[in-house]
Length: 317
Image (tube, rainbow, N blue to C red):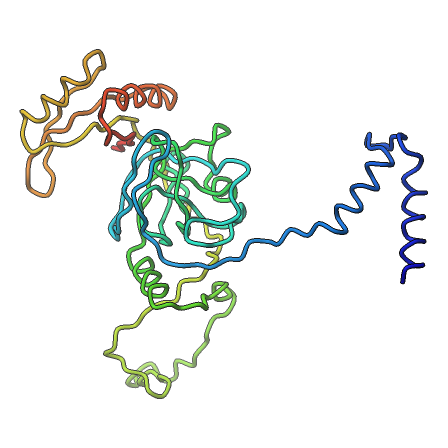
């Protein structure tokens, strides 16, 4: 064994050339030997996945506090971004990060959750698994993997107008699945090519009762199993780009809205009355704004003025 190792090292040294000699990539022979030993003796243990359900404590990112909460009826329009390079290997709910997965990060939703993301500028929609916290930019409502951004048709800037709608049934099933301590999660969706074919028989005959496995209770609540990796399914709809605004808060009284407005002196803020769930309220807003850059700059000014709950939104016709 020792003799074989010695011959291997001699062969390596010969192939690397004399110390100080550069190869075609600019690496010296000595550095090649060092790299060999680094690969031979240095073994980084890959992180282990441990998917779990989490809501989490309040946290600060980008100078703003975020307060995670369960919300199975989430539906919002705003700006989406692409995950930055150098992403951590594990997500906030203990899954392995994969830039090619149909996954996303959101600041306050329970994790994991399933959501429909629609690019309002291209009309394309995909389902994603929300499994991480982010993005750090308070002007973004979601951050998606590079693969999701590619499928949706994000522009080169990496920022797009999006609508995020939670899949309530799938998200509740997922929460129940992980809260129950289920360690085994389905790793893939059912093959799309598998289609059951049945003989319809006599069209005039009474339909046969469906067959169920032994012990099946049709009155018992049925739960779906949500796969760990969602399939790539893109649905094309009509583009619906909107106007970018900044929502500085809604108030039940006009006096409260006026007090908020007084903090925004020097900014083109206004009060707009609207009807929400049968009740009128007064909203303080700024916009429409001409670009994402203008929205980011204005939001920074609003946050600096002490309006912590301000957010960039997209209003569609």
